[in-house]
Every structure is written in structure tokens, then in C-alpha cells.
Length: 75
Image (cartoon, rainbow, N blue to C red):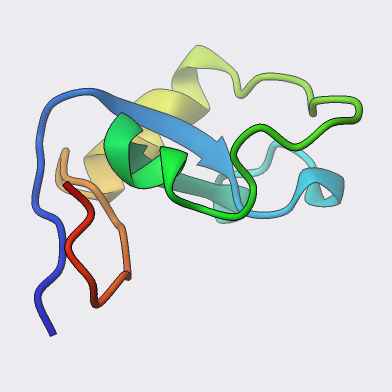
């Protein structure tokens, strides 16, 4: 299964809106992959943004690469 390995346009998103801003709820995705998720563009209140420290740690943990798990081509 080919996975996205982009290192640009990375954003840190919440895995689940209701699970808070802990590092365990962070996922790193490039914008094109995130736009193809079912969560993109959902209405309703957005969760609070991650702190700069959590964002930096999520990027570091992801190796500064998209963590998309799609088996189809994202872009």
C-alpha cells in the first residue's frame, strides 16, 4: 500500500474533535490529503488549536511527513 510521503504543506489536525488538544489526538497531514478526508469542511464548532509545543512535537514524531493512511493516491 503506497502512502503519502509529502513533507510540504503539513498541518497538524485533531483525530477526533472531542478528544482535546493532547499530543495523542494530533495527526500530521498535508493539505491535499486532509482535503480528501471525510472531516474536511465539516460544520460545527472547531476544536481549540494545538499549542505551538504540541504542533512541533507532532511534526517531529511524524518525521515531518504526512501520516495519511489512504491506499489510494491522494494527489
